[in-house]
Image 1 (cartoon, helix red, strand yellow):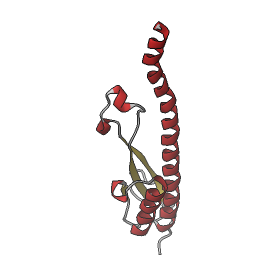
Image 2 (cartoon, rainbow, N blue to C red):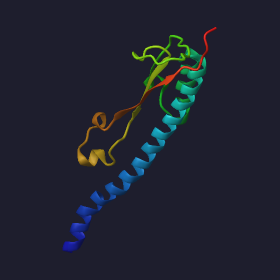
Image 3 (tube, rainbow, N blue to C red):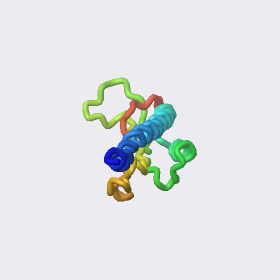
Image 4 (cartoon, rainbow, N blue to C red):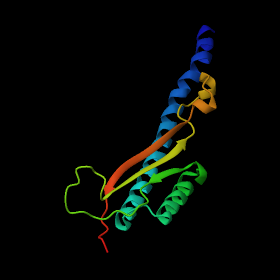
Length: 140
């Protein structure tokens, strides 16, 4: 009887480990998909010289569709001023570079949050992909 009582107390805690592994796999798939989408948009922006409204709209729509996230929750901050390819080293790093930052919310970070006393608002995070790339657009 003693073993049954201990099992009843420990089993839910042990199941959290299994659920956490599954949740980590799901979150890693979200992160991987986001990175692939941002990479594709970055390659388009390199050709255009900046993140145009069309590239940002396509990126937002694709992320929203693939991840099931509302498009209003997706934050995209990127260079909108056209940059041109330069054939010399810019020591200040301001010319010819396209900067971008894309952030999406991840709703569940910890499995069994309610059981462990973690509030829903605290069981969220914002995942960000940020970087810079050189423009490939030639001056007209």
